[in-house]
Image (cartoon, rainbow, N blue to C red):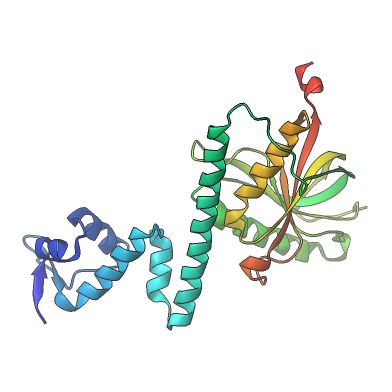
Length: 275
C-alpha cells in the first residue's frame, strides 16, 4: 500500500487540499497518518476509489450530509434509492428553473390561475401545539423534535385531550436564507374542558383559504407554494395570515413519493389590504 502526501493525493483525486481537510473533519475521508510534529497528512493509495466516489457525488450536487449517509449504507439497493431520490430533486429543480425562465420571457403576462388550487372556507380549529424557533439549516431536525415533544405531552394529558384531526405545521415567520423564525407543530383537538398538561392550546381562526394538495417528498413542496401564490395573485387576492401544512398521512411511516400535504393559505381581497 503506497502512502501519499496530501498534496499528491489532491493531485491524484482532483480534490483541493481545502476540500480534503473538510472531508477529514466530517469523517468522510480521513488520513491514515498525521505527523505529530509537522502536522502533515498522508493518505493510502487504496483510498483513491472512495475519494473518486465523493468527487462524483459532489459533482452532481449531493450535500455532504447525504454523501455521508450514502457512504455508510450497506448494500447497493439502499444507495440506488438515495440516488433516485436525489435525481428526483434535481428534476424538480430543473422544472423550477424552466418555470422562472418562462416567466422572464413573458414578464408582462399575468399569473395564470391553476386548476389545482381551490378556494375554500376553513372553520375555526382548536390546536394543541408546540412552538419552536428555527432556521433553514436546522428546520427539519427542529420540527422532528417539536413533534416528539408534542406527542409526549399529549400522552401525558391522557383522556383530557381528544385529537380531532391530522398533524399540521404553521409558519408564523418566513424561514429562508435571510433568516429564521418561529414555526408551530400541532394537532386539532376537541375544545378541552379541563387539562393540566404543558401543552399550548390556541385557536386557528376560521377564514377563507386557498388550498393545494402536494404529493411527494417534502423537499419538493416549493412548487406547490409557487402555484398557490401565483393563483392567489391571479384572483386579485392576498395572503392574510400564516400558511400551514396539514399532513394527511404520517411522514414517519409513509414513503416520500406517497406523502400527501394539504397547504392552506388564509386570503383576503387586495382591496381590503389597501385600506
